Amino acid sequence: MEQLPQDVIAQLRALDPEVTPQLAQSTWALLTPFHEKIGYTAPRIHRDLSYGDNSRHRLDVHTADEPASQPAPVVVFVHGGGFVGGDKHAPGTPRYDFFGAWAVRHGWVGVTMTYRLAPEHTWPAGAQDVAGAVDWIRNNIGQYGGDKHKIVVTGNSAGAVHVASYVAGQGGGSLAGVSGAGLLSGIYDLDPASRTGPEHVYYGDTPAEAASTVHGLLDSPVPLLFSVAERDPAIFHAQAAGIVAAWQEKHKTMPDMVWVDGHNHMSAIGSLGVDEAALGTALSRFIERHTAEGATEGAAQ
Image 1 (tube, one colour):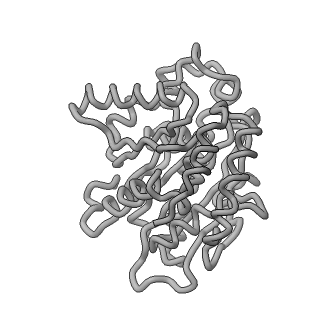
Image 2 (cartoon, one colour):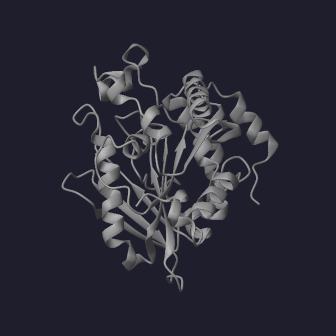
Image 3 (cartoon, helix red, strand yellow):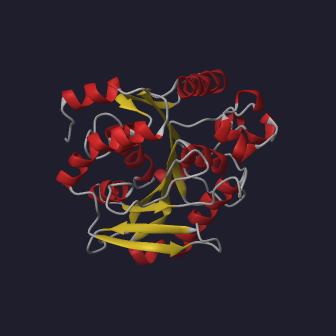
């Protein structure tokens, strides 16, 4: 199992947790050599496939050289970027090809996607775009060796918000074939009074009862995994605590929640493949559990 040296973990812990360009630069400077060492690209990457009419409606499909004898589960990643930035692929860097490579090493088909951005496109555009990408996957992934009945959608930060909105039904679109969703450092209770600047750009004055996903997630037929990083900003810890409390009140049990030890808002997703115990082990077990033979009965139909 891949593991980062403790001095690197110590350096990650020492970074200011505020989500800034400086945090991103410092974090990826620490992680990139480890992704380069293990290789951060899948054997085949099918780039910039269009799933809609907008120029941001693009996705990459990451596969092995040859498809498996049986269709493989499909694992989708929706990037963050504060609702106003980000992309599925930053040429010359691991972001976010490493997610596709991680998926392929586990025997799955990986999909990384972009979506429309605020301020031009506001709520619920992100959820609509996730729904559109999943619809494309259902219709097309078979030709890349993927199983349209075993789709797990994951997102980090703003990407997690968009996945949560999709699962909660805010963007329309079908959940058919969605076997699980991973919500990594997400925000779920979107009261206008507590929204930050980027959230205001995307949500505006949308009422909390419309924008928040808590109730939709509690009632979702899709199995869910949540995570929060040790060095996430306080708002993400508060959101994680809130969803745990709401889940316990409704279901009388804990949700599937991962504490990403030693990592910050950027490095938590970047830990996949290079520090597997932090997030990758739990996430891969979640995917395997909910895409195993017979598990589709619990997936959305």
